[in-house]
Image 1 (cartoon, helix red, strand yellow):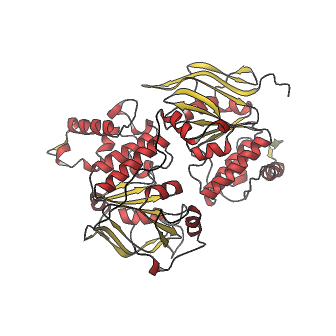
Image 2 (cartoon, helix red, strand yellow):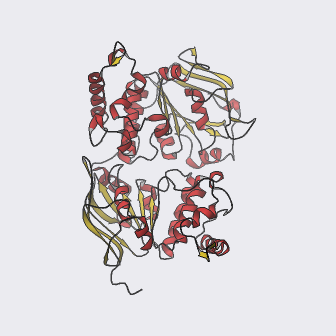
Image 3 (cartoon, helix red, strand yellow):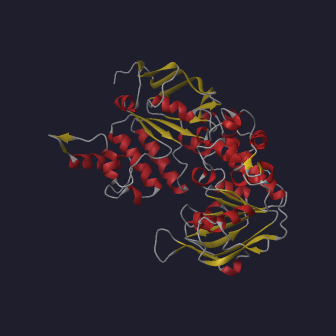
Length: 516
């Protein structure tokens, strides 16, 4: 290759500013040939911004980028592609109604005399998928395949363009434990074949398993670059957050008292399959002073179960008793009055993204006496309330209460929702994947808030796909498989692999063995 440089990519002294915030402040990152290099940091540390600069989506105010030792100018993603740099974004950029093959070749079509050479394209893709262990069905439509398969499609899209430098932005956020394992294998194969990989993540287990080196960013600044062989999870989390972090949840024994939520035989119809229930005859009780977790692999009815409970979906059978009242058929507005709900999709059901932070903080409470005066909103009261929550829950944003929600990092959007919901002080807290896509600092904080709710005598119903979280935060675990509760466990007495068998449907308990 005749490269004089040991680095295939160098980003030197990069500074990138947005209104009110320095996203990247003099950051240097060097990627070696054939290595997997992790970029680690909390939400809002500047990881995605730095990668967007490398991919040509942003122009830095200062600094330069070198490829193979020579300075290059990357003004847009086409320049990046020409330099063989490819990126798999956190939210995939695929076209749902196209097939896998059409998505892969889109924009890089091979034509002869104006005709698309699909046969050659198919052959090339098939060879790539074999070489790197990327099994996909080339003729399936993207809308019909799993998230893991969509991701493989994105990876094949990069390889089809002969990319040598592959950027993975939070690639495991939406995968099941099994798919994550597969992806780790694929990444190691790619590196073995000489590809150089930048892997953005805040999941310490994955970084320790797959990366050769790690560069840590904190609040937009460069902290250090270390070999994974010479470090450990505790040290990395300290560098990332700037203080020692409790990686284990700290909590006392639970002392549950009266039943707050009593669900009997709940059914919710499926949106995807006619005459089928997404939630089938689910019963459970949640008491004051306990955290009950519904665990399972994504897509086993958890979403519909929560939608039935909170009123987003209609319950077709069974009943829901909250605080001794039958709320089965109440409207969504009435249900939301009686419970705190941290929703699964923070963009769709948690925030109005184009509203300011302060307006999001009082979304369900515009009508409360403290925020209105004869039908007019009391803006001073709203501002004061919002400022207090931002302070109390450490919600970071460029411009405080007036920041538009869309412009905040995911972790801080999540903190804002949690601040708003917990402050409503309801007996039942429903938390659906409350830490999805968040970093260790934010996770530690949110876990401690949920434990605090429990210890104040609230009933907490948690839905989580993260097994670490399920094991360390719950007082009781219910496993959901294909819309049914198939097992009930004490986290202190069950192993992760045992839970996995129930989650995959390989085992199930008799109703008599379950107390719920």
